[in-house]
Image 1 (tube, rainbow, N blue to C red):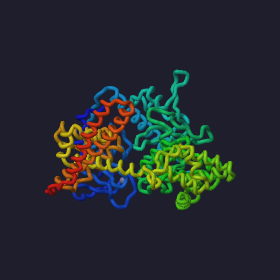
Image 2: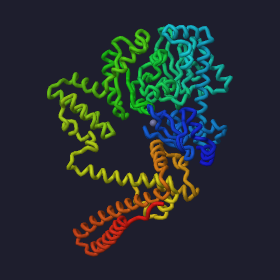
Image 3: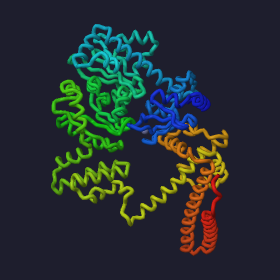
Image 4: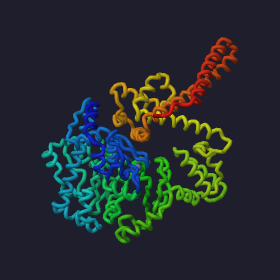
Length: 599
Ligand SMILES: [Zn+2]
């Protein structure tokens, strides 16, 4: 844990415009700065940074937050890591309080440092050691030049050992730590041996640029051909992608990513100037992998071999993408080729042509099912069962709807068959005209707009905070989500006497922080008087909503009392109801009275 005071100090010293300018070109526009958003592809800037408020927000993709959220998002850092990064940039030191947190952070930092030392060690051997020359020749034979080898920090672990023991004693690295990182192993409880030998080494780097593990490929015919570090505190195969750190910028530029299977595929593609490829690490693609990629682009294409195994894998991956909330695409290489051999023999253009022809995984999966189960009645019902099983995993109602219609169009299955299982979310938004759902939705969204507007106005004008804080009953007019934000703002106002948006966002998850950042940029051009009047309207709206809700509950209570023949209770509830009704009518009257003009 880093102390709150320290975090506040770092935030005060840091300029969000400076930190973001390290990565994005910003231009002054009015009171804010604008630039091209690094989180989605765009041609006109909608990425806004406010120095004054210490926040950023993109009106295109809705990402936003404080300077720390920016780094968390941009480099996939944890909150403490982001704080440290900013501190370092401004030459501030971060001391930790709370022993456990401090120990954990420093242990991770220690592990990262060890891995980094070891990666440099293997890398040096590649260029200096006689066996390193052999590895370099191997890479050259596969078309990998020295610049690419350096970009991916490739290394070599010689047959006879790389001398890790000497490195560890020089750098005072304990054998125990090296064991936990899977760099060395222990035989019969005594002698240590190096895990990697006679291999080309591929350091596996986190999106933030830290070495988390190593992969190795044999130089001769030895087995296993590929070897990865075991799972360690820093390395989880199921969510780590090889090459993501090096591909980050390429993915953002191209607004797409291609997923392949091996390190050498990624490297061969990079060598041919396709800089947006990543690879899984000896495991099939998981939903976690896809979720990680979706932070960089929504256009994810998995590249498969053209054989049966590749086609089956493509069909299976539909479900994985659905789980991760993305509609991916599949591209196929000619039979017998892998990305490495293909790009070397046919070149960049041919590979890009294949990627451009990628098919939506949904369509691919549907036609694969059709081939498998046939077009008979029985086949169709099995397909329907399979499709609705997968669609049950779709979280977003709109997407579910889209997929249902696609399945209906492509497979000629009746829609009821797909929805019958009740596992598929019901139609979103555009329900039938006589449904009561849309009007309820509209009412709900009007209430939500009022609550959001109030939060945004509170961030804009302290007077609004005061008027809400001065009405303790107002707190219950908000839904829990916005009520919590209102509390946060009011508490800050009471404690500090001012509203510091960046500070409010601290500790909030990125999605919520970005929503509030957006609200704080919304009403900048309104005058104070306009803000005050708007707040008044919103409060009246919420108060009326609240009164209506209470009246509804009282009506139920009255009916219950009638059924139970409890005359006393009934009379009391009736009086309460009349009181509320009177208040509501007062509110309506006030609404009709002319308002003094805004000054
Ligand atoms: Zn954006």
